[in-house]
Amino acid sequence: MTLQEAIVARHSVRQYMEKPIEAEKIEELKDLIEECNREGGTHLQLVTDEPKAFAGGMAKYGKFSGISNYIAVVGKKGDDTLLGYYGEKVVIRAQMLGLNTCWVGLMFSKQPDSYQVLDGEKLFCVISLGYGANQGVQHKLKPVENFAEANGPMPEWFRQGVEAAILAPTAVNQQKFKFVLRDGNRVEAKAKFSLIGYAQLDLGIAKYHFEVGAGKENFEWA
Image (tube, rainbow, N blue to C red; front, side, top):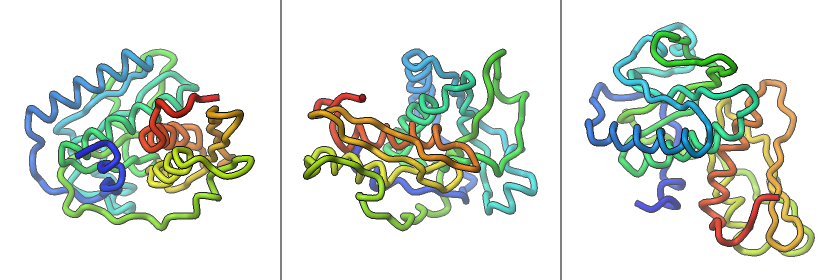
């Protein structure tokens, strides 16, 4: 499965089977998380065999079940976009490994003994991880024009990038982002205002999708 295929196949999944993740897949994800943390200065952490985060009333209200593995999205305050970008990089790799995921911004219980939050850091959200009881469903897609701005016709690579971004998950089910094509091949990614928050985190998720869809060799970030 390619990155592009994984982006299309990935859907948010809330119900999971009681099936352990193979050790080699855990190790591959841990290696990728370490690489992301080195590159981005983030503090993502893989938490396994920990069911308490999704055992409370909020998780049940959100129809989450069977979750005992998740990624703790931890990082410096203000690093929301970086965390979204690198967290989604791990999500897409998990999809390529046959696993399912869901970004969860609100409906879980914090378990501070299960991950490390250093001074100046915070837990932004978590990402559930495991073998889904189903493969999820695609959310209704809005038109490309809702998320794109360009003077004149859109280059094909730009359109493909925005189309990939529209497939991106968000932490609280909102898509508050826009991609603006500047001079030549310069692209600006902008977050729109959100009362709930998480817009900058979601922007990072969408930026990773845009890069995969557009091809990093075709543009540079403004």
